[in-house]
Image 1 (cartoon, one colour):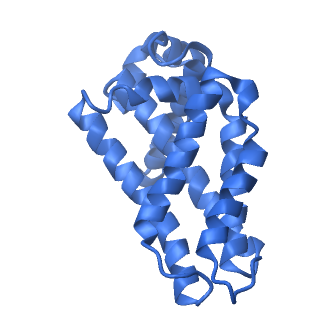
Image 2: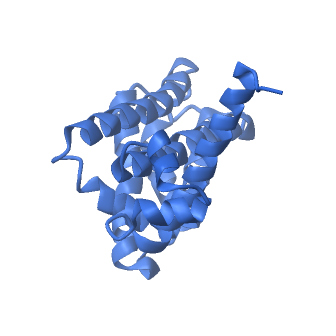
Length: 209
């Protein structure tokens, strides 16, 4: 019996997820520059033509892996953080720790990620995708900060600027971790970052946690 449209879309979604999962493993193992689409196809047990049917290039494939790693996990982390604590300071702290745990658990993929960052200034399409991604990530973080301000828990700051600083802190730690993994304790770094941020952000008359 022929599949209907909904079934076809589900098949496509499953195949795309299968390719992305394989690509994540290949990029983690080989890095971005040494990995080949043929490696991804073999890992996913599909033809190279099938990979190219879903993704136009190796750049597009890693960008999709990176976007899913960032946005899907951040959405989940934000949802968990919002339910984790009664105060916005507690929610922000929970989010910081969750993000640090995710980054620590994705260590092998970070090498490919940083390799890929080098394409941002030279590749207009990649630069635009990163601009959209960072704008989206920043907006979600800023929304949480803004909510704490509205509730009277946080002092008045520029929530968009603070969100960018928080993102930059993690990206900077990733580079340091790649240079010397022993130098970065992700849990301690997250606790230190959030303690310093909350010291300046939480109003003196508001509960700290």
